[in-house]
Length: 516
Image (cartoon, rainbow, N blue to C red; front, side):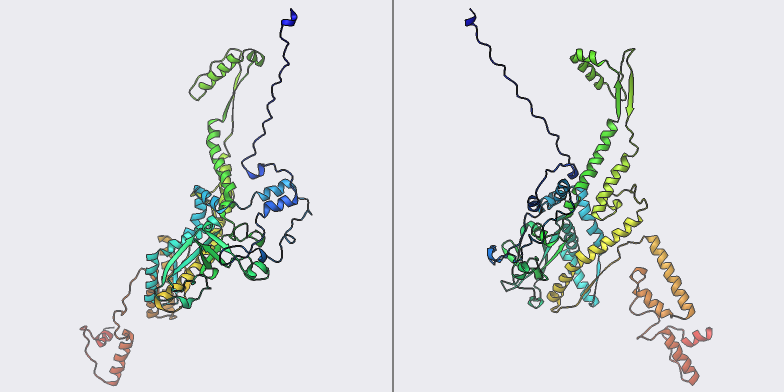
């Protein structure tokens, strides 16, 4: 009856699970890059190689590309033997896009790195020179009305966020091609200037034409001739454009003719600092490691009971729980030292501050640990950074603003110079010490006869920080004649025998002289 029995089926082999790959690390240096060719490296490094001429309709002209292709001049050199994974790491530092920069700027640390330096650079404001006092007062009143200080801060802040900032100066004109033609100050009528408008780079399209795209020796090579914004062409002379950090010509098309944005430079250091700060509480809660000697063979004989015992142990494991062990069981506890964790965390934040070109005390509002505890060097370097923001980011905007403002308000072009107020704000004690030193110096010079009392009074009157207010006509002075001049006239009259006119004050200068 064996033939009625079913034939045994062939054993089915269960599919072996594929080995799980270890996920790459969160940092760019943890990624394992595969070997790549030079062509692949160039394609990844320069996704946009050449700029092309754009016609008035906004279409690229295929027959007007750069006559000298950069592919031969900008080739990677194989001399030196740079490993592929190192090249891949540098390629990972490429442009991340303006939209991603805007997203990263929401993070509190990136936001402070972009916002605080422009605010510190413009906090004390600026002065206008080259005009009469009444005209300066009118300009300052219009600046407050239009929020020019806020505009300057925003201009410098978003330059750090996007790596480029574009400012449009709104002028009413009857010429429909006013912005398309090169800028001409004579085309600005009285009352036609309305203020400043700023545009994010993802709303702008660069357009190049002529030698700006074909001749590398041109002074404006790879500098967009026009910017198309909302379908309207703006000649570059009508705009004031700044860049956070310029890139070489070969990378300008990739960066959409902008500069290096700060979020791209700082994101990895911010992630490292925030992750280090989050590791601190986790280490604090898991720094104790409990060790109980166990017979592993007996535990594996009944794994369910062993797991149950482990779970019961874990539930009662805290600073207030009890642990019952056998007479022959051995228990020990190991603790992780947390002595230098705070220094490591602060070091990560100091690296973030170094990329942002500002002291850690400004970025975090706390005293630094490690490096230079006094912070004197960082403060001096930060002042230089703020002075650079004033000169390279804010002054060009204000120069064009006041050029248009004076032409629109007064009907003429006036040469105005913007002078920034000192960055440091002295305390009341420092102001009192400075005033005392100036008063002592003035007293010494007056006693030596170097200056007169009237000269010291004029100097004190011109000093806005003195705290004193003087009338236009000083006491004892009429029609520009001082008390000393009148006294000299009286003495001359006495010598010649002439009569002395009576004084309205009731006491004549003669009586005053005789009383002396």
